[in-house]
Image (cartoon, rainbow, N blue to C red; front, top):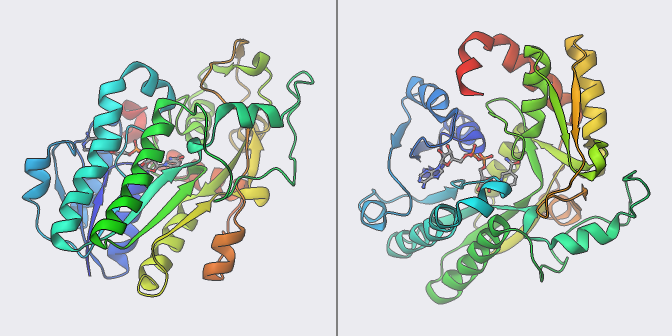
Length: 340
Ligand SMILES: NC(=O)c1ccc[n+]([C@@H]2O[C@H](COP(=O)([O-])OP(=O)(O)OC[C@H]3O[C@@H](n4cnc5c(N)ncnc54)[C@H](O)[C@@H]3O)[C@@H](O)[C@H]2O)c1
């Protein structure tokens, strides 16, 4: 089977390229190398003789000239929510037009699609309501997890809208043109090959800052660092996508929520403690008390459907994510500095 991975030099894309290539699939990547760190990841693809098509995904002329692929895994996005408030055109053309271009190509070639969607399709106010504002002391609320049936109506960030609209276009193309698809709506994903930023990839950024002894800032929620996210190890995501590919004939045209869930979640404050323990470094921290209208205090995924459907569950928890990311960063420290 030959597979095209869009955003193949990004964090998720590169991990998938390398993992699936090892599992004997023929892999190509499409990536314009706009994300800091994608040039580093490109070298890893080149070492494995994986070709990257370096152009903008919003250019349909170029997309239409690509060879035929049996499966396209769409991991291409401008994935930072705060950027989506500032660079609206770029986010819409990469995230939404990009996916529509992939769908038009899949329609001609009769390719299958796996789409990487996001937990940010859920409305901000609904999430805010969950967490009582008792000095921003968030805690796990076991019966408050997000799944495939959670309502999506309401403002959710421009990034989130492009992901939800992409999901809808995929369902629409599937209905009209019989394209088979799987949508994976993921919470925070982390692990090696992630070049984290404050609003995207915070786990790897936090570990990197501790290694490099750079100051930390708790942003929003009164500067408490109490916000909680579940975190899925990238190796678990690669494993479940591999299973999805193998079972595509019998399980398709479905949407799944996938995340670290209650076995792998952490607050920013506790992540700091973990990073201090593993690096031995305690950093100077500052606070920005004001919360962005795009930030959320809490997110935990309900994995029930994916577990039941594939008889699979994530093997790793947040400790494994932090350890594996730390090992990768430490082992490549001198080469990685310019990409953070
Ligand atoms: N990382 C997470 O925590 C997370 C969580 C949920 C969903 N997702 C989704 O998973 C996918 C992959 O995310 P990621 O963390 O790997 O992001 P990433 O930024 O690391 O990777 C995206 C890649 O797309 C490329 N790209 C951006 N704009 C492009 C364009 N116009 N044309 C061609 N290439 C372009 C970038 O260079 C980058 O290499 C995204 O769709 C994202 O929405 C990620």
